[in-house]
Amino acid sequence: MTRLRGELIRLPLYLAGLTMLVPFYWMASAAFKPVPELTRNPPSFVPGDPTLDAFYEPDWDPAVRADQVVAGLFQRYPDVPGGFLRFMGNSLFVAATITVLSLLIAALAAYALTKMDLPGRRVIFVVVVASMMIPWQVTLVPNYLIVRNLEWLNSYPGYIVPALAKAFVVFFLVQYMRSIPDDLVHAARVDGAGEFRIWWRVIMPLMRPALAAMAIFVVLAEWNNFLWPLIIVQDDTMANVPVALSRLNASNAFNPHNMAVIMAASLLTSLPTVIVFLAFQKHFTRGIALSGIKG
Amino acid sequence: MTAVLIDKPPTARPAPAGKRARWRRAVPGYVMLLPFAGLFVGFLVWPLLNALYFAFTDFNGVRPPSWVGLENFGRLWFEDQRFRTALVNSVIYVACTVTLTTAAALALALAFRGTSWRDRVMRTIFFLPSVTSTIAVMLIWRWIFSGERFGLANTVLARFGADPVSWLSTPRWTIPLLVLMAVWGGCGYGMVIFVSGLNAIPEELYEAGRLDGANAWQQFRYLTLPQLKPVTTYVVITGLIGAFQVFEAVYIVFRAVSSVGGVQDSGLMLVPYLYDMGFTKFQLGYASAIAWTLFLIIFVISMIQLRVTRALREL
Image (cartoon, rainbow over all chains, first blue to last red; front, side):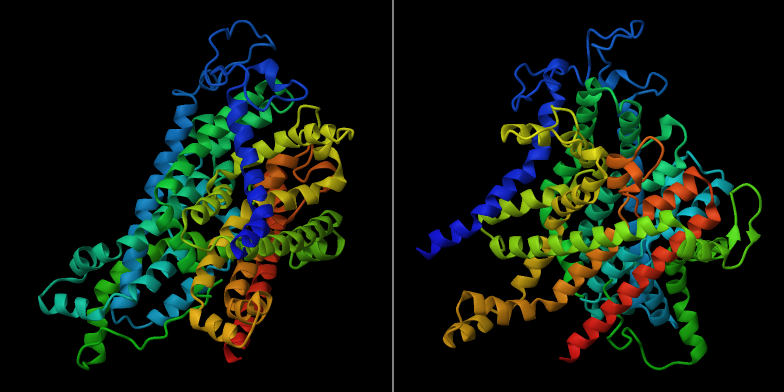
């Protein structure tokens, strides 16, 4: 009986869960609808005649600019080699590089701050933690100017270098590294290992769960990053997926025929993140829980 | 912000040695800190100070900045009508978003805190928006609330015999829609934190409560809620900070032809205004004053959090 009552109380939440999925469903189904079906009123909930036209439209002819036949996603961007795949490549490259480098840098710093007797490390750690409450948009204008002066606008270093120092990652890794016994480090020192060696061979393997949690965090955040790329990217070729998506939207805002293409692009943007999340869900939620619970 | 500082005594300290020996031993440590410290100073501390300097200058990014003292802040805080709109919008949006998101997150955590198959599926569903590209999500919303008859929201309305609403160009609807999108997108994140908070509460408390005859509501009110206080504070504070920084939703869904902030600036908030001033109007000094104002707001909130958590610990 109590079981049944519990389920009854949960009923609204099940319904909420169902409505949570509606936008995703709408996106996925729209990506496969032919143009006339998109603007039909009332709309169809299942594509009556599923098609891949939004990705590649065989009838589209660049010479004829007809309103009824719009170019598929992979036919757009004639000046960008690779088209939409290029944007996905940009996003992937930038996200992967930032993740690997920022984790290495942060893990080095966390090791020095927890396992070594550095004069002033308390102060350093307090400064790092305090910096976490600075909204990063405050540094937007100066960082834009720095990157412009370095002539890194519209380039991979412009994406990557300013994003490498992540105070949050250092904080998280320090918290985790404290749980590793210092005796391990002592023993390695007695055996004559240098600090870098201890860091790489003893500590880093033990840090794997924490590094995995942070890696997923950083990868997703960078893949979805929008405001910074929006500012430093001028040339379509260097756009990442979110910027390309927003430009696709801006240039076609008033043509409903392009909606299927925009939804197809949204689908291709979201799918990788959802897959990464589903595959590494355990690490990811643990990362959030660990960072949140120690308030 | 979490504030757990080094609370253990310094570890890894071998037999007492001279001060100089200690410094010498520390050299590899500083070398290991160097990459992080260099980037941290170069792209965070230095820009932060620069932003502070620019905030007191008239600067368009081309001519060198010229010092104007407090003029930017004076204009921003006391004269600028658009900033007032942005601030009021932000405060309303933040208040509604954080309240609703926290309540929804707590309800979800209570309902789906277990390890059963059902609970995990439901948690995944509610968490999905947090990992999906914000831009993609915003484009979907934009279409769902499209003013035409094929927009999903209007289709549902038509089912009930109502007239279509032009959601995106009616200023009255801007903030409610932004709040809806934020709650949809944010409740899963809070839920995960609440779930781990709930699972950290010792089961004995509930056993004792049941022995004393507490019913489900009393257990929730007198055991769960007080135990969850630090977690709730964390969810609320990070929610506040995040909500004050909203940008994509305004920029993608509501950007009007001539303005970043939507029709009649109905969706203008702090970061969109910062972007508008800095990167479409190139008033970089003024934009820096907005940025520092945002910083001050978030600083005050963080300080309140520190106070509250300290007070809670003393209880």
